Amino acid sequence: MHIPSPVKYGIAAMSLAGAALMPTLASAQTLPSNMPEAKWQFSATLYGYFPTIGGSTTFPGLPGSPSPGLNVDAKTIIDNLKMVFMGSLDMHNGQWGLWNDVMYLNLGNSKSATRDFSLVNGVIPASATADLSLDVKGTVWTVAGEYRLYNADPAWTNDLLLGARMFNMKNTLGYSFSGAIGSFPLAGRSGSVEVSETLWDAIIGVKGRYAFGANREWFVPYYLDVGTGQSQLTWQAAAGIGYRFGWGELTGMWRYLDYNMKSGTPIESMNFNGPLIAATFRW
Image 1 (spheres, rainbow, N blue to C red):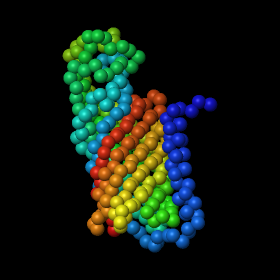
Image 2 (image 1 turned 60 degrees about the horizontal axis):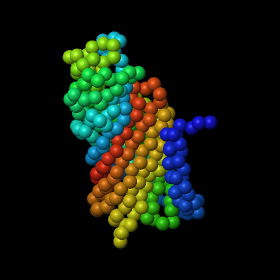
Image 3 (image 1 turned 120 degrees about the vertical axis):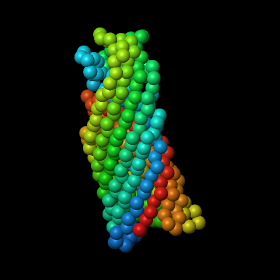
Image 4 (image 1 turned 30 degrees about the vertical axis):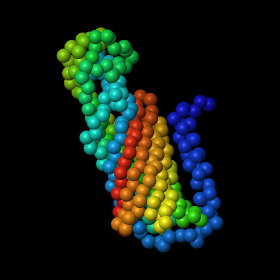
């Protein structure tokens, strides 16, 4: 049986995560008394996220039948970040908890006299160029239940995650063609077209940290999840370094979020890759 490559990568990633957690699972079984006080504890985090965006979108036939569809690679056009917001809220009571993470993105840019596009089932004639503008707006919301595992070494904190991620994305393409494309002329033709997707996927993952230093004020945070559902495969990974103050924490991380869609969807793939800076407040 042939297993698609993205699924293989997801299985491999979660296998590695599971192997890394085996000592922690064993410790959780042998140290049941290592439990926090059963009361609600909260943390809120605000992020500044600065990703590069990649992916591919197939826009439907442009106005003027029999116009073919266009395929645009976001990475070749977008290099302008309009606004990105990311925040999370973590709630714990004993070993159980609930984690919410929301990311909103608004990115876009334009290119003049470019050939960074392709025709669906067609070849771009030598005379064809285009002025293209691409705007991407989206919301990624992850919500998951948490189960905290305890290790004999108090420097480690590990939470198992099980939940869902919602992906809502709208891509808007503005175009103005010069030359001819396919069987019909597009000289001077201009306009815009948009596609959108809203997908839900089940996810499983792990997040945690390793604290070090004289008072364990330094820590290395990490996050990994993988999921599927209405998309073929989605996965996310992040790691970095942080420092704990009396009022809270400052963290710098590198985050990668990837989506591979099922065949036939207009937004074929999307990924976000870049650094973030976060401030966390606990009470």
